[in-house]
Length: 365
Image (cartoon, rainbow, N blue to C red; front, side):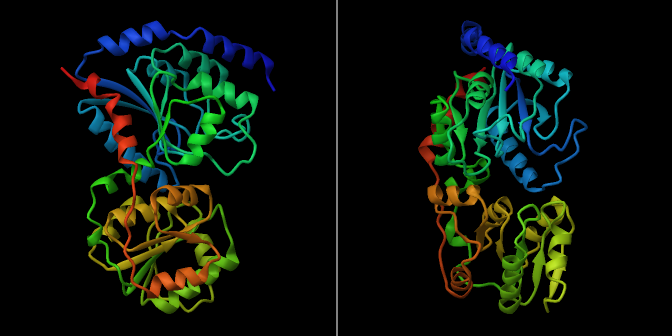
């Protein structure tokens, strides 16, 4: 552990510029609001889109919510996937607000395999800004039995705002942050799901469609179970559409489906091809391991079952009644395909409203 880094971060946490922050928030009246977004939808500092197209679904939702909060939004986007440039961090210091947009970059071991990348110099620069980052629908990377370690607690308490309430996607993440000493947290659910607060669930079909859309996950492969899922779907549906959300999904699916008699249509690895299918009028059910692809299908009024392969789908389902099942539960998958069912997502409306209300006074003329 880098003891020098720890000492510097403690110093920054102790000598926060809280009076200046308070004054800025009270008297800030500009109509145009400059906002920094730490954005998982960007692959790098060149602005290229993330190869995981689920990040674009998150990016779309986060941008929508920020535009609703700040109608005249001036948005600075900084990737979370690569080390940002110092120039970007200096520009971020001049923003009125900073948000981390809906990704699973929190961990009990923030020093290992960092998904939110900063140099020590950039942490110091960011901590000298008036506004520290606020979480917007962020989640915990994976199930971790151990509490956040000393370094993670220091990093989280130093980097994140202690003046503004954070939004996280599930209770598991909220409890983990609480255990790190961060109490200003609300479970609002994932911002990709906030439109469910005003949604007519009667418009989602309750019975099986003729066709199916399947998504599988290249970075969490289980060829035996994924192949079995493809075989089941091939036996139940006429045409199987496949959308490769991740960079390696297409090749993974082609490999495991090589000798399966399946009427498969492979879509392009692009967000546009997915949206085109959703708008095409073709009736289909979604079954797959991609969480945000499944949420997008539900919002597009498609009957959907998300096969949960990590803590994200499982924890969100506990909190919201999102339709999910275990990866090896083929009885449940078969029953879902063959049996009529109605979905009704339960969103934490009060928590969402409370989180949003913090910013209403900053958009007044």
